[in-house]
Image 1 (tube, rainbow over the protein chains, first blue to last red):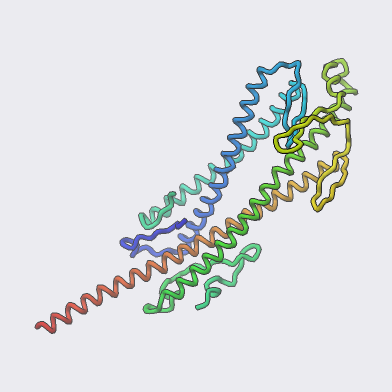
Image 2: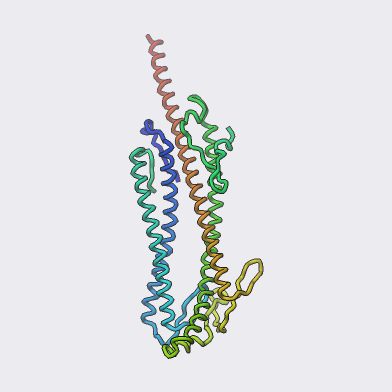
Length: 131
Length: 216
């Protein structure tokens, strides 16, 4: 990834100062961080979908039979209401994790936006901060 | 100019060298007419060094990140066993009549379906137990009482997460240095392009005026 492609036609007047460099560095760092968040959020989303499917599935389940609930690598046979309790717990944990991720990624995004504004204002088309 | 002189002596956390910021390209190169090849190569070398460190640390983080789910799985299993025991003892104390059926099903041995081998599952009944065996690696397995096992696994999980966090910090630091060097490279390169262009126009004008003189 080349963060800076300085256009030789119009960069003559813009010198990179230490402040600019620090802004570019910060942007680069946040950009990498953001990618990590995105991957984690994607994984959490899929997990959430699986749990949601499970909860609709368990609503239809027969409560006289035990269900198989997976913990780690092993399936445990447990009565339906126990499974529902665990499911609720798992869903709550996941929701908490997801909203934390969402919050951090939003914060990251706002900071990046501010940096983008500042850097584009100074360097114009001499800098490229988008994918 | 040797490649090591581009990286400053200053070091960030955990000994990663800091990348220098070039105040003035001309000064960095060593004069208005100095060659750029040497400095450019030095910058390139520094970039590849940072890239190498980056891939190393990324690899290490991946390894750790794979370990964390394993620890979590084990932990949730042990926690479940512990909950089951606690649930049973508390049940015998208070809600005896409430959920008779429930306590019935709880006193039965725990029935599990576990993976015997890839795609092959077997059923196993688990006697009530207060001990688990944890695989510690190096062909060692140790028996732990449930609370001790939970404590151990939690501390392992915390350590692994702290490790990932510090590696992430290192990687972010590295990313900043790498960006800095990339900017340095672009600036030196562009400075050179600009200088060449100026030289060329100067020569053209010089050539023109010379030929004009000859003609006249």
